[in-house]
Image (cartoon, rainbow over all chains, first blue to last red; front, side, top):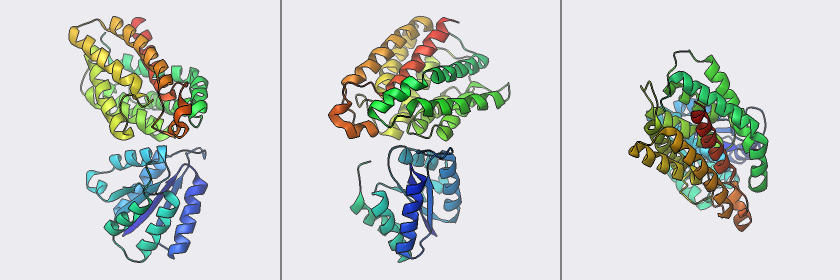
Amino acid sequence: MVSLMLLSHSRKIAEGVKELAEEVSGGAPVIAVGGTKAGTLGSDFDAIFEQLEAATAKGEVIILADMGSSLLTAETAIDALDDDRKANVHLSPAALVEGSVMAAVSLAGGLGVAEILEQLEEFRLSK
Amino acid sequence: MSYSKEQVRGLLLKLADMIDENKQMLTDLDAAIGDGDHGHNMARGFDAARVKLAQGPAEQDAEAMLKATAMALISNVGGAAGPLYGTLFLKGAATVKGKEELGLPDLADFLKAGIEGVQLRGKAILGEKTMLDVLIPVQAAIAADAEAGEPAVQSLEKAAALARACAEKTKEIVATKGRASYLGERSIGHIDPGAMSSCLMIEKLAGLVKGG
């Protein structure tokens, strides 16, 4: 199974993009993590790591993140995974909203991880 | 300088106090060119580190304490400084593994590995208005002094002055990394908050070593 994981500084953004991606795709598996433990804007390493562990137990994961600490925290969480799980995680540099919708639609349409990652290049941002 | 593991615990707790005392100043620097949370984020991370250090077993070695600090920063800072400083302490911690006493060469090794980790994580190099603009020159100076057998107190005193000069110099740099990069030229004239927090840590370390 392939999961899509969306990370944002804001819980509302993460959940809003999840809602959009799920609705447009008709139910691709989407995980959203946003904000800090305190509910403020930022990143929560523990929440990201926990979700990543659960998702990699089921298969591959494509991560899309908004910027700055979301990306750095995602990379740190990937580093903290067991070595055999790391290769199952793909951090995409695509724009969060557009990339997430495209990836969710492609995922629901049965495309493979490599194809989705290639499609996401279209929305690549320098973050 | 020869530091036992108990002294390392004391150093880390005093670094935490120092960050707490300076959190408003660091946040104000960040408000000018970033998102205005660096000091408070760092203080939250070091507060968590303080709790972890207090909970850890008394026989905990330096590596375990530095690792605990790293994980507390990664888990609790909430901003980009969490993964960056967390990585610095995590990669640095590995270099003190099994060591009972720490001296100037160990500090040079700690910083070298830590900086490599930060560079890998942040994809930044010297001269991009980041914490590396303080850490890289300071590490080089300390490593050279350690090689020459210079006493730690003198070496760190010079390192503290160098750290301050390097932090001040980030004013002249146009930011290309992090949130400050959105400001482009307008980031000139402002000290990078990460460079300043690194500078404060080196200064505090120098002060503590000098004070015995």
